[in-house]
Image 1 (cartoon, helix red, strand yellow):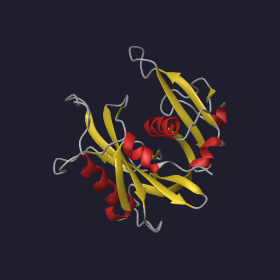
Image 2: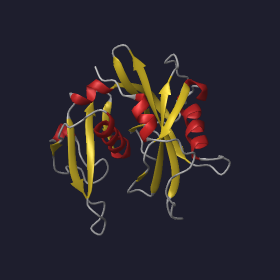
Image 3: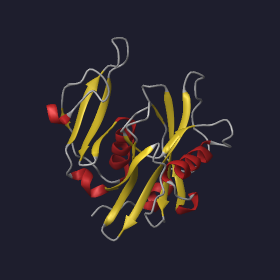
Length: 213
């Protein structure tokens, strides 16, 4: 059973409604919610699997969130708007407890994650045009699910990057979401599990298919 220390999280991740860094003009500002649910059996994350019909990141498992809209007051407003639109649940179900460290992706985004405790009833009227399903991911599963990493370059001139993968029964968890989760687990859950190192076996994203390894 894995439980996070909420007081430690609050103390180490003070709430900021905007990004802590200056975002370059050619980078898209975005934010996500990291919804933590609590049960007697342990804590977990709420994730969504994006629709396979979407142009951007089809079928990918991710936290609810997206790019900032001009009418959004701040990045926290962006994250809460996306939560409501995608998950079909009220923002009042979330207790925002802090801002996790931001992350520049290799696809031109900066993500500001907002840590939240979910107090809802796990009933989601999610947007089926954007979301295929909601995933309840118990943290304890991340100590046993197949866990991989590889180093790739998106093109010959780009920097080498390490990608993490969890091969879940719901699908492949990878990319920025996996990176944020691994960082969080290492900082707040004593996650010291080494990934199995693999080589790229796909020419493009997600670059790796565990079933082919």
